[in-house]
Every structure is written in C-alpha cells, then in structure tokens.
Length: 573
Image (tube, rainbow, N blue to C red; front, side):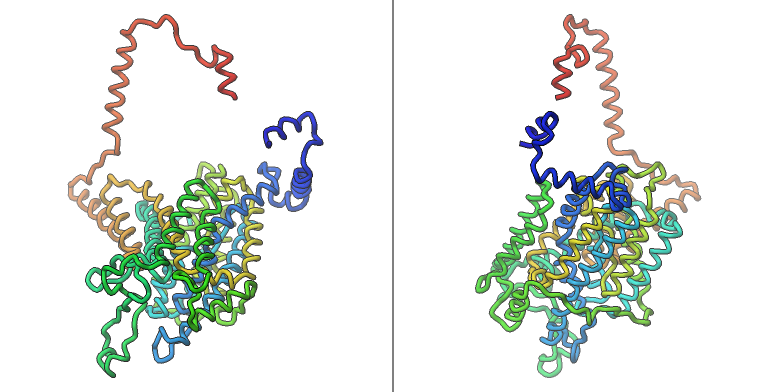
C-alpha cells in the first residue's frame, strides 16, 4: 500500500490520507518554527516525526532502568537504620520498600533532567539515566548490602556529588583528553565487558534476578533455582552466634538449596528464564520493544494472586504490596532520599575515583559510538558541542545526587533511536517527557518482580561484552590485564578491584619489559593475527596471475553491467 501511495501521489497529490496531511503539516510547522531552528532540523535533514519515532525507540529500549535501578539501589538500605543491628527485621524491610518506591520517582526525575540537559545543551539524540554497573557498585561495593559496607550511605552520595563536579571541570577545561590517554588500552576495552559480567552475575542471583545461582559453603556458588521452602540461609559464625543459644545470629542475604534434588524446581526461576529467552529472540529480530515485552510479560503473569509465581503472596507483606499496586497512579514523596549528604569523607577516596573512572569511560564510549554512527566525528576524534555533551552528563550526575542516586550517565541504548533516524537533541527532549510521565506510575513499576528483570540484566551483560573484540589478545600483557579485569569485577563484587587488578598487572608487565630492554634484553615480539595467512594469500594470488597469463583467451567474455543495459537496469532496480 505504501508503494502504491508513493507512486500515485506524484500525479495525484490529493490522494494522501488525512493522517499524512496532519503529519506533513506538523513536520513543516515545527521545522520552520523556533523549535526546528533551535534543534537544526533542516540542517540535519530530519523532521519532528522522525525525531519522535527515535525517542519512542530509545525510551522503550531503556525503560527497564525504571524497574532495575530502584531494585538495585534499594538493596543498599539507603538511609534506613536497623534496630539492634538486625538488617532483616520487619521494620528495616518496610523502610527498604519505601526507599524503593522513592527511588522509582528519583530515577525517572534524574533521567528526565539528564535527557533535557543533553538535548538542549548538546543537541544530540542521547538519553541519560543512572548507569548500570555504577548502581551495582554503589550498592554492593561501597554502601554494602543493607548498609553492611565500610562506607555509609550519606558519604557515598556525597562522593557522587563531588565526582559530578570533577567531571564537569574535566569537561569544561578539556582535560578529559589527557585523562583518556592515561588509561591502558586493554583495561579500557575490557571495562564494559567486565561490568557486563558483573550485571549478569546479579541477574543470575535471587535478590535482583532469576535465582539460578545461589551460595554454597564449599564452592562459594552453585546451581540454585530451588523453591522458597527449600532455601537455607547462610549465617556468618560471629561471636553472637555462640551466645543466647544461637538466637542472636543474623542471617545473611545469601542462601543455598537444602539438597541437589531441589535445584531448578522454582517456578519463578523458570519464568525468569522464559522472559530472558523472549527478550533475546526479539532482540535478534531488532525489535525496539524487546526489553519492554520480556519484562512486561513476566511481570503481568506474576501479578495474579494464588499462583506459584505470584509477586503478591497471601502474607502481610504480600497484601501490603498488592494494596499499593492497586493504586496504579501515585507520586511518591521524596522525604528520605532528598539531599542525603555528609561531611564525613575519610573513606570515600576509592569510591570517588571509581565513580569518576567508570562514568568517564561510560560517557566517552557511548557518546563517541553514537556520534560516530551519525557521521559527526572529525579527523581528531571530536564532534560538535562535545564539551557541552560531557558537561550535560556531569550536570545530570550532580542533580541525581540530590535524590541519593548513583552517577547518571549516557546510555548506549540511544543507538536504537539513531537507527530509527534520530539526529538531534529533540529526540532526547521527547524521551525526557516520557520519563516525566513515568513518575506518576510508581505503583506499577514497583510491582515488577526481580525474576522479571533478571533476564534483562543477563542480556545487557552479554551485549556489553562486545567490547572484548577490540582487545589485542595476541599480546600477552593486553590479554592478561583484560582477562583479570573481566574476572575480578563479578567475583569480587567490585568494579574498583577489577580496575585496580587490570591496571596493576598491565603496568607491572609493561614496566618489566621496559626495564629489561634497558639491560639489553629485547622486549617480546608479536605477530599480528593472520599475518602468515595474508602472505599465503598473496603468494596464491601471484600463482593465479601466472596461471591466467598462460591460459588461452576466452572467445566470449562475460558481459559487464556497463556493456549490457539490461544488467544495469536490473542492478539499479
């Protein structure tokens, strides 16, 4: 039908539908108006409808952050205080649920502001939200699960605020180019994949995922997927466990299955796996709705009560969740997360450096990848308004800290909008409007179970592993430092330890090679992969040329497109 409409509209301009007239009129009105001139729609050969379509694609691709980020950050406990040190008391868990609801609103507000700032200041179709990986590091590597880390919640948020200001200075002064050169190449390429492995590790567990991996006394981790009645909490044998008959032991957040026969019997684990496969299949077909459909499908079937996979069990906590879910529309008060700062910064140095490093890498990689796909990169590796693009990211991080959030960063999912044709910051502004609308639907977002989002974490981790193809695996110092970075992040539950391990191993190996070269020992030499094969191919080409010279000429050479008009017409068609 579209082909027929296009072909006939040349001779019959009035055959356009009423919808087409409205769309064309709206495009012309906005393109010729102040909005079109501000966002340079005509100069970049785009229109409002294309930018709107790109915003929809970007928002739907990254909408999972509205469910995943609050769940991860709420596990830090936020400003909640455990009475008598019991971080699993009903009062503490109730406070944690309230924090999760506030984090939904905070996530939406920070994403909205980040998108608006990026669109208006840098005029780029890049959306922002609290960074995946950084939120996990904030919770498990800095504050700790339920506040059991070495750094308190308030000092950690203050570190995020300081990191935002430092990033802003680096962006405005241009020092970011110098900082980028200090990061070893293999560590820089391995960092996205390492963070992806960290996220996948979270998605495989129960707190934020499908519960496929559980704790084990002998092997640390093992196959899980057992039903709730078959779960046995792992308890740290502190001095309190040996007093008062053992009743003072506080169970940890880790559990194991009571026997191997109970593994893979949990209905929620299987539903989570199904949701992950649905998302993966849709991604293979390049569907922008992949994450939304996968998370939405599992969530909806988990909202029915009195089933094996219900998110609202017939308990006091389950009934409270269901009552909140029935409100559908609600705007949460920000009375616990607003401006949670502290002047106690004695132990935040490592966290501050890690936040800055990862945020810097995330933003640089995302912006360069997206702008490069748009064809705006110059010969120096820079792009128009790059200073304002990096500044927008820093401002979004500063604003996010107002609400107790981990650093806000640019999202690579913005590439979905670019693929849909987006070219200007109008896409980011429209995407910010979508995040504004999501502020009012906190009850729905809060009812998304962890086994619905766990599969998305695993898939996001898989997609982030693509950066490993850039590592020079034939060079041992590159291969070893990259591998250490990737392995240490998920296994130590810390982005910082992974970065430190990777950079130290690279520095020691390269430093040793340099020192030995001063003593007369030549540094290791490496051959580029495929070099020998290329020589063989070249030799083979020479043989073919000699054989062609000796072969008799063909009497009827094949027609080329230039000689055959029919071939040319078919090629053009």
